[in-house]
Length: 210
Image 1 (tube, rainbow, N blue to C red):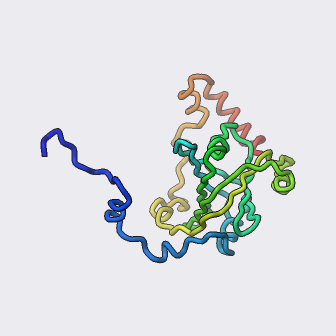
Image 2 (cartoon, rainbow, N blue to C red):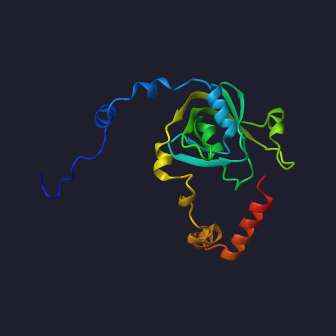
């Protein structure tokens, strides 16, 4: 090999990938459901937080956190979920993606439980008042919701959360050890005063969550 030639360190196809990582454990294949069973339903009812992944028609990906009280995602039936859209910054990245590419991936978390629930399927927006009205919080009814048609649902082992010690009290970071979001935005955009941005943010956290 010449001094300028680079070693081949990539993975080019599925066959090469499988040869590198090994075969799938039979249970890992068999555990994938095409609907939500009682364990999935119970986990979703306990979950106050999820990460929602989508992509646009050109494959540009986005992952968005969603959270509210435990069970904020409603199970309408064993193949359908409803996720309310709470107030945010109006970027609507997820909604924009779903207009052209309806595929969606969800990971549900429950504090104190290391296992997660993964749900993959297709989503569409709804403005149906009959569906959204029961999701009213603090007199605010969501303007939009996401209806998710479930293709796959399965529990993911807890190794990632165990390694990260995500729920361990000793893993919690002192808030003062990292800059406030107001300061970060002020420095990144050069368009706002840090103290003013922090004050607006705190007001939003206090009174405009919904």
